[in-house]
Image (tube, rainbow, N blue to C red):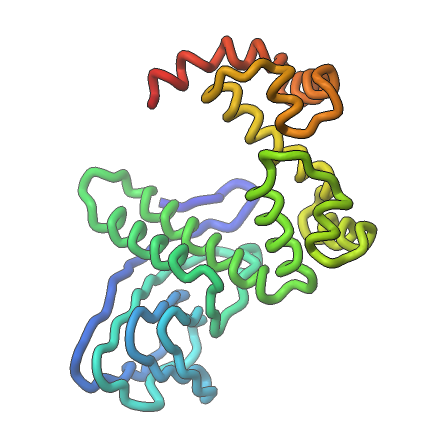
Amino acid sequence: MLLWEEGGPSLRYLFSGKFYTEEEWSHPRRVIDSYEVLYVQSGEVYLEEEGAPYTLGVQQGFLLRPGCVHGGWKTSRGKTAFYWAHFSVSDFTALRLQPGFFAPPEPHRLSAGFRRLLHVANAVNYPAYAADAAMASLLAELYAVQRRDGAPGMRLVCDTAEWVRINSGRKLSVAMVADQAGYHPDYLCAVFRRETGKSLKRYINEERMKVAKNRLLTTELSVKELAGELGWENENAFIHYFTYHEGISPAHYRNLYFHTHMNNR
């Protein structure tokens, strides 16, 4: 099964697993014809690619390229465990991934991605394309890791976006967000737009809308009370913004989805 055949690269999951040993071990020297993602869970893996040595510790990994000589340059001792997964893709550049070493700031996300991939790939009740989708999801997490670490300003944007998300249940402004980040509003807005393609003000309002929709379905607050709690100028401003972006008024949204929400709890 291939993903993204129309208008993008075709991605195929090949095979995966989790290696574990308590004995001395060294990665075999070889050349592979697919891409491989390796992610260490315990111990250290001493990996060499095209003559360049790397030491991979816990929660560190490596994206190996096909056609390159790689192997172990030193023996691992003690408990050694790592996830591995092979995939092929018609156009690697379209994935916007960087081969080589990586160390995710939120390691649990990649670990969860590997566990999901192994579960889906080995279960009998999933369709064939499910493993491709799980592989694509894992690579998307890796892309997020590399973008955060490599792109100028991306760490600032990620930290800002996380702060906005956590605080989106109260009144927020661009000035407030910039103040907590320690940057001039004009600079922060410029960096945010450059890295995300959207304005910081728009992102703030999108996060506030998520909270608003949740509160409409989980509380009995009136629309006026909700508008005040979330920091909108007044009830009419909130209704206008909500209706413009959702196509229906807050009251209509509550009437339309409240019972569905309650039945799904």
